[in-house]
Image (cartoon, rainbow, N blue to C red):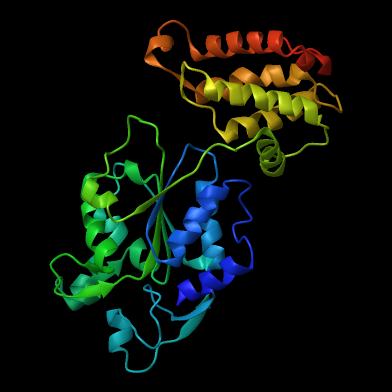
Length: 343
């Protein structure tokens, strides 16, 4: 069983090496995986929720499955094609990465997208009520793997109800069919904790099937600086570390501001890192200056934040970023030592 593989890996090392920091979240995830629990990772955008889920997929051992759409175990086939085959179907070896099936949550997502639907061509051949006419959805393609549901709280309530039986019993009843198709997978969902206009409330009955794991923004400036330098694109331009640390300090202070409701993500930090280099390159300089950083702030940050109602009617986000940066320059005059920095 895959739990035995997890147990061996978790004793030997930290398997989630694609994520820097987040030690509490990683510990919670390891604990849940050991007991075959479904999880929802909750946290703001851009902090590595998807990367962490993909990291889990790399831990899954390679397995031998039938060459069908259900990833059937050759010894215990579950789909009609494999069960009715006159001779053993061909098999193939699949990696954990290949069994990582992603679903993007959206209001127009249907139960048929996840569970599957009737194929009209097969319905004409086998009859509309025949299980052979059924084409499996992503849930069955994740069999013996991971079903990753990104932005779970953007999916409609009807879809939540369709998943309840699967999460509780490990089976899915297909429409009016009298057959249950086992679905053996690890369910990892993600959602943003902040209230947005395009989210659905997850019912208590639905949430009761999950353990919740919380992720946060990078715990320290040093961790965020390492993430930014690792994930950001690079030009033939030097970005002084003290200047980058100052820019990240400004972003981290915005996250703590009492008037900021939607906070700038780590992608904002990466954006400053990349655009600062680009501005220096276009100015034919070999080193990023504070002016290069200042010139990128409005373009990179202003649309990534949202002010609270008490503040948003007094000024725009662009004006807010300008005012906060002016205050930052007064409090941190060392920022301008790297070649200017007026906004």
